[in-house]
Amino acid sequence: MVERVAVVTGANRGIGLEIVRQLARRGMRVVLTARDAANGEAARARLAAEGLEVAIHALDVRDASQARAAAAWVGSRFGRVDVLVNNAGVLPDPKGTRVATVDPDVLRDAFETNVIGALAVTQACLPLMRENGYGRVVNLSSELAQLVSMGTGTPAYRVSKAGLNALTRTLAAELAGTNIKVNTMSPGWVRSDMGGPSAPRSLEQGADTAVWLATLPDDGPSGGFFKDRSPIAW
Image 1: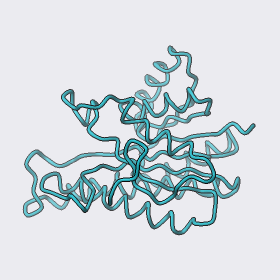
Image 2: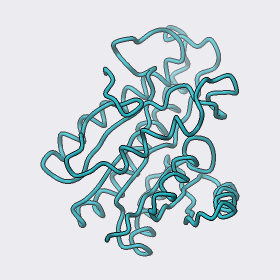
Image 3: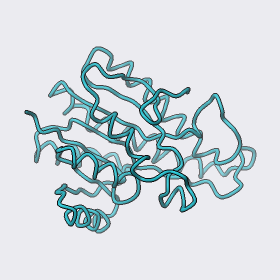
Image 4: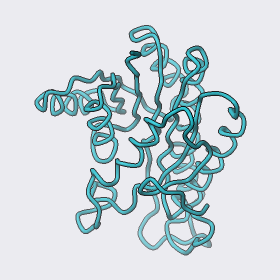
């Protein structure tokens, strides 16, 4: 049986760390990436204390050269990348930000990580997926990106995550007919550093759909937007 190899970005804490934990518990070889190597090592040590062995690699998704280097390192060490979870994300909008007054640099900041960063890491990992004829790309989005219910507030975050959704659909269409599936999901409002302590959902709940999408069977969906393992509107 093939030992699947998963790469999770922005995974030293919060939902990303929980995704790493759940994938490792399922027997995957998981590479935990983080911008800061020390933070990544601290997260690795936490998991080791739970009996879970994962690899770590420093990766700032905003740097395409780092993305290529990380993919090359994983390929050299493990010979494959089967799963990529684009979890790294930012919510840079100051409180009360509105479209009419948002600083364009805030929007650029959101896009650099939430869209371009996810694209760079995906592009770096895709050749290894193609080589082995298998891939699962999971993009962490948000219900705040849903056009059907788009409202006010956090415009940079909303627009960038909507862009990530468009990237998901486009790439899934390009890869139709292959065994590389690309989906996006909303974890909901989760108790994390981003979500805050008042959020109603646990990290386990927030990570569950990402893990489900990361382990889809060959007849599973591609090009979809999901929450709690069910399709939701774009």
